[in-house]
Length: 490
Image 1 (cartoon, rainbow, N blue to C red):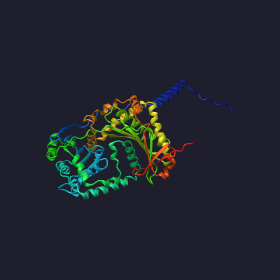
Image 2: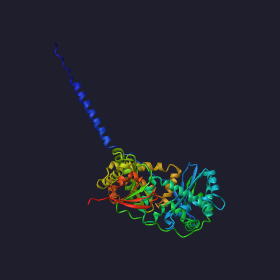
Image 3: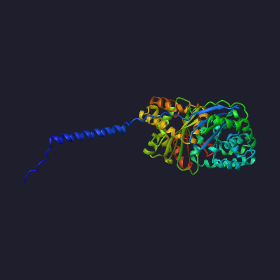
Image 4: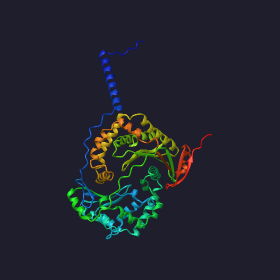
């Protein structure tokens, strides 16, 4: 029986094995380093909006043009410096009712005639009433610019308010609100803003459907005659034409619009909520639990707005945000959870919205508050800050590719008094944000004392409410019912 021979290892082969092993280890180490430290984003191109040219016509009407070549459509926006904050205290909703009646009849044309004319121009028309301004938007095929301005001027200068149209509009608005009140998300957000604007004129924007029956035709006529003047209006034209052409056409159709009293100055922002408050709204047969949590935040004109935007993007601005990773991917509490910033003149509202499984409402709110607290005690990693900045700068050009989105951005500049060069400076301002600026901003952001609104079926969520020290209970219309106070052990 012969002894088994052991394999012979030649010196050259040994050196080759060692070299290959070392190379493999080096590659793995390099890959691991790459995963932990992704490469910096590519240099971002200079961001420039199309030039905005603005003039004031003889009657005080402001006119702005935004040139956009290669578009078959023209977008026309008429901003009136009057909104729900201007409605009488006892008649919230008058501003919205007035704005929605404007396109429902002129001296020459009925509501049906106006609809047919807009359709014949290949156009769309919409009305949006905000806190301190109203926007009428008419978008038509380029060749119908004259007809479109003619029609819009008739709506304003030859308005004919009728009782029949008022009754139809009141009924339509009533059932629209009634349907929306079945949506837990709608009533939760509405109640959040009601609570934040409780002592502010902006609170009148969030009226109940029951108030509509109190608005009479003479109230609408009075509001229109009090606020709709040329020197309190701004026409914005976006499309393929020059300022000279716009001045000639707009002057022709709106030269008889008269001046009136100047618009009042912008209201001061509401005070931030200083004590944590929990509100519950009963939405029968609603699935899951809807959470809205928020407070007053810096305005778009504030230097803190850009760190706030970066914080929002990291915390809850995308499907890869910290809140999503925590509440949905890790713990399985939420169907979705996002943060959001909503702009108002002179301030913003920062809020977090989440739809969660009923049994995890209290735990979800705790996790959200923990995420906020974590950002008050530790700076965001530089890589997360840079990724958020890269997203904003890279994504912004995509938001203005469509004509109507570009027009919306320009109307936002005008309605919020941001300045024509605001978006041209946007990229530079974003690039200046760093982890220290975000950390300093978060220290002053009042998210430790937010208003928390929970909406859902009270029979499903009643077990969750007992964990809170105090909960104010409202019905779906936002009418206060009673307070639920946690029992304490004696």
